[in-house]
Image 1: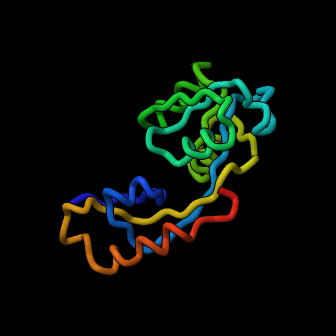
Image 2: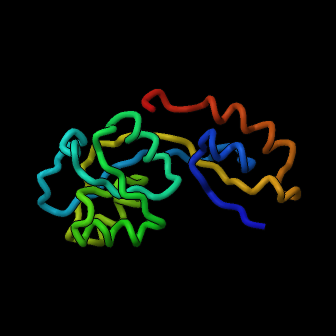
Length: 150
């Protein structure tokens, strides 16, 4: 059995059962130190790394459709793409990016959160031991408990 922590999205809710949400967080954008990108609006026409399946994709498609998204598999690939100048920014969960920025002097945060959302444990519906009634019943309230900004 595999249980993972995921951002709660309607698409994911079709294939997994979520627990009650226990975490929330926002997204930021990591850029090379000294970048001309100082606010989200500066990303217009630029390339931004996002993780495949991440909720940052939906936010950019709805709010900044002029940004080209480079969809990669994991955080290491995202940071490498940024440091190799294959992208102008790297959008991901704030909690992850702040740690990267503290450890990597070649990067800094834009500092403008793009979205707040809820996270919960999830497991595949085929895993009947995990798919308890309480998880199934909790899915609908969580999907409507979105933050007002996105």
